[in-house]
Image 1 (cartoon, rainbow, N blue to C red):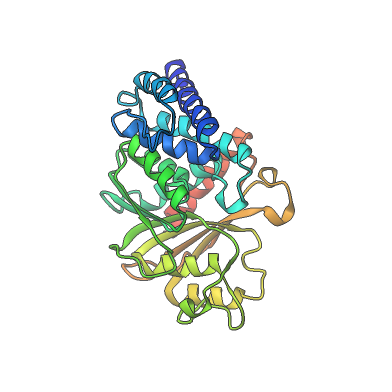
Image 2 (cartoon, rainbow, N blue to C red):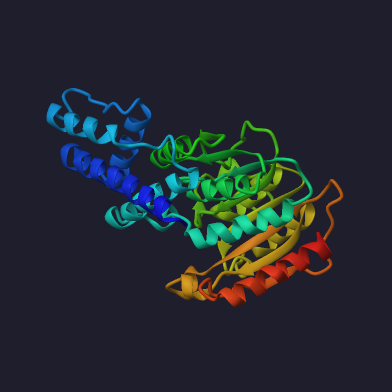
Length: 338
């Protein structure tokens, strides 16, 4: 990253953060809510939104002056994403966000982007992406920008049932001038969208409460609530094109629960399990919070089971030599198996 980019990122973050703090104090809202309001103000011709005298005329004047100094038109999309990410990181500390609302770390986003790039190379002219648990949109934007930087045309879809998170995703992708369609709904229900080439998602972990809605899912639990992440994997396969890839961030113990047989049966019927990559232990505070990357490919369109499933421990991201070796191993695996 050059010094100009770093300066622009810091400047935009400081402008966002200053606006957020003014709005927080004035409106008595969370950091995320004030960030959402800030983004919408900037995108609305840089005019602060005022209802029933709130925020006050004095604060509106300060915000108007602040927004005049915001210049995202000439910034690179990735630099805009990084500035917004700094604000989201501050929000995660300030608002004490629940685990399923935490942002996917950049290092993991870049690994997922690298895998997608390798898997689709030479196969398609452009790529349609879907994140069925898009949240604040940071992972989808990371992958989007990474593919565009390789001159791969991208269009993307994001779904989430949390209105605030989706508004933040909308602000972020609009500021970055990305071709992204966002839908506010429960991703387990029927989605009105065309099939996609790749589903990429940091799946929320937990139980899905509406048992009657998932009775036809093969991954539904026979008794009690079903795992939301299992249902989302099955739903994702449904919306993949034949031969398309699903790349998911999942609990490291995904295949070690009482519901594993149903998940495996569904994958075996509809797709090929092509890989499982364990993320570096250093990224996680406890053994139970460790994550892995699940790689599956939908059957059809000449897709075939890899002769050798990609099983690997991703090295510490700080170890450049080991990371380079890991990438070479993935490259070789792809050439021989996919």
